[in-house]
Image (tube, rainbow, N blue to C red; front, side, top):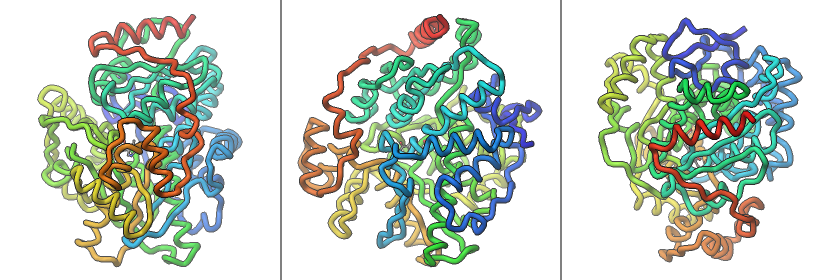
Length: 494
Ligand SMILES: *Cc1c(COP(=O)(O)O)cnc(C)c1O
């Protein structure tokens, strides 16, 4: 059976269901599979449905779950909740391909993992014979929050609490969260940015005060710090490859590259796991917005958060502390947990760290980096619409921008797939402004205008959002967080 180990203590071994249930390791580290070369040959997945591939791939990693549990989880997740039977369709554009990851219940790629995770969590509780409540603490830069609220809504034995930056999400994202339904959910705005929210959740996860607040409650996370989030994300890298090979656009064995709009480094890390499992991936393009801390890191080997934080039209990538980079560094250092502890200590204390040259060289063999400013992002949205009638959201625009730069540098020999991570309607104000120069202050008005202009269908969950009652308006200061979370734990435990 595969063990999962902590990035800050490689001797701490847990099984896969324990890793899913715990979220973050108690030492502050992240769980990671001890062995990555698990050998999944894409040609063995030939002509399979998305669900079949998902069951096959997820079982390979989460191998203490029974095959029935995985199958039920996968088939329960990827059903009519997705408004497209392929689940993740692929489209050709002139520069390569777009992998559309936003056909799920909340219109962003987070749905691909957060429709499955609650099911995996329920199975884990059963395996542990645990009858209390799992409190899912979630920090969000916009999309994870709603996807977690939808995924865990009224799931027995769970309670969700979401923290989002008050001024750091799009109006539609905010409304999606404030109107969340279900008896086990809570949404709290924070006077701060995403990094503050993520730090609060990590701190609470390892805090004695919070852990001891109620004996009937255990803490876990729906963020990509939970390995149960990352593993379902491996599936679409394989699925898009298999579709291309089955259609004859490539041959099995050919290499492809992926351009990934990156924030917390979770999505792109799933691509790395796919490569290590045997998917022929040439490069992973780490595409950032104006908060290009990762681009600079991949160019210089120095990671530094000592820089201004910008709010952009791609808010889900407005992040300076990309948590999942820790997992890549752990793997690429040969599981050197001592090094990881010292790098993370340095990040905490000085806002910066530097990795050894050989490690950087090895990482750069696979990872390429690019970033794009706000004007280039808007220009990308406009150009693609004007030239090819393809409507994309700002996050996807950052990825397509990265794909174009990659093409200029490496030519067209390697097929490239950009991950399209959100519906353009989630960011209607900015998308409409990019296309027309006209700014609407109301997200719903912008949605209607965008629809009139383009004829693209508005996803059902966004179309009826305006009529839903707002349930959550609480807003807290950063220094209230531990108190608020402790009280919430007590309430959940009652
Ligand atoms: C979360 C998100 C991203 C960034 O993904 P990470 O896994 O955090 O790197 C990109 N685009 C959208 C729309 C997102 O919601």
